[in-house]
Structures are given as C-alpha cells and as structure tokens.
Amino acid sequence: MKGSLKVVVLPLLLPLAAAAFYMGAQPVRAKMEIKPTPLSAYEVYSLYRNKTWEWSTGGARFTAHDRKLVAFVDKGKGDRSFAEGNWYVSDRGMMCMQATWTTSANAGNARSCFGHARIGDTIYQRKVPNGKWYVFRHAKPRSNDEYNRFVAHDNITTKALRLKEQFLAKK
Image (cartoon, rainbow, N blue to C red; front, top):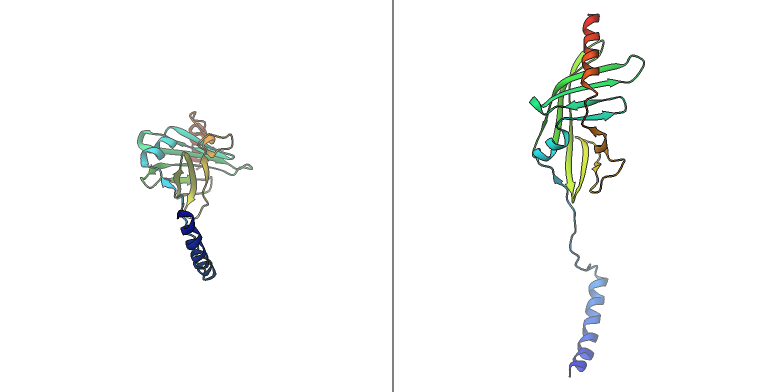
C-alpha cells in the first residue's frame, strides 16, 4: 500500500513543482550572512597599548599612561614632521588619534580614526570613514598581517623629540 501511495502522489506533485519554478519561485535557502562584530574598547586598547606602529616613513607610539601619542615621519629630502597628542578607543571598535602635527614651517591639528571588527578569530581594520576593510590580524597570524608592524619597543619618541628640539632651535 505504501508503494502505491508514492505512485499516486508523486505524479500530482511534479506538475505543482514545475508550475512554481515556471512562475519564478525560488527554493527556500537559509540566509548565511556573516556580519563582523566590532571589537570592545578593551580589545582595541589591548592591540595598541604600549606599542609602536611602524610605518615605511616613521611610526606612532601609543603609551598606555594617559593615552599619549607621539609620531614621527621622515619622507626624505628634509620633509620631516612629528606629532604629539592622544589616542582613544570606543566600544564600537574605534581607535582615534588626535594630535598636533608639526613641520619646520607650521603646525596643525589632525584626527585619524580606524575601525576594528572581528569575524571569527580574524580581526579586520579600516580607516574611517571611507577606507576599505582589510585583514589586520588573521586567526592564524601570517607574516604580512598589519598587526606585525606593531612592536613593543619605542623607536619613535626619541626621533620625535629630537626633531622638536631642532624646530624650536630654528625659531
């Protein structure tokens, strides 16, 4: 009897399925959208505290005490500058640097922010507001991770203070 039921029901369902397909019905699929989760303020703080972010032209030092920021840039041919200011974090995964940048000719305030989010154990970063997300630190760290440019030693503060003294001596 079970076999005969299949023989009767199956021919009735096939035309219904064909009609649904013809009319544009799509099979039901679970939406598997993976959304990044912003890092907490403490997680962001832990990435930056007492670290130097080394750049090809210099870097920035993020001290934990009073959240001080010191930066130094040397683009060559006398194009050098330094910055002094602060850095702060938020529970929305943000880290911002607020500093006064000084060149031999002038000084001005600047603010730069970076967003941080996680998908699984991989951390992503982007410059806010319009930067593209990129892998900051893979779940299994790789040699080209941006986070590898964060080092414990401070090779920036002395250069920045020396340049500051040079600029002050010329005035």
